[in-house]
Length: 186
Image (tube, rainbow, N blue to C red):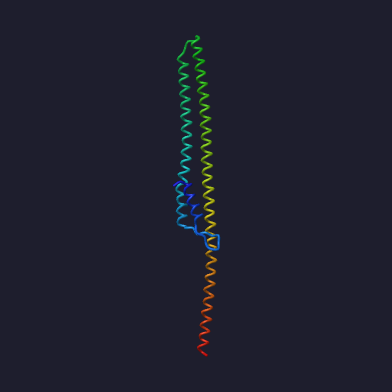
């Protein structure tokens, strides 16, 4: 399951949770929430690994571009070295070799710039995605935590009401017992 799907499930769990009567508190299945948090712990490293893999491919592309440029340079140098005569053909060949070298250098610069731009964009996208995932996770966990706090406060109020009801029932029971004893003595 992807990080986004897990976050969506947590959000749906919070949105669809039962509410405590007379409060704005919700009840959330803590086992289910813990399960989703564990999934996030498992899936986030995978998402970050994918971003790292993209960055590793960036280096491979640069290496291939450099190898291709080096190959073009070697071919141009070999071509220029093979011509020894200084006549018009030699001059043309040298000029062509320089043009090829210049073209190779220009292509290398262009490939390097495109590769660098792509790598920068990929890194930026990966960082933005990771930040978005963390922001959503923090928001969801915070919302869930607030819901748990609200539920705890509601349970504390219910416990207080039950204790008061028990005490009142005990007082009434004692009063009835006292009344019964007095009636029996008369």
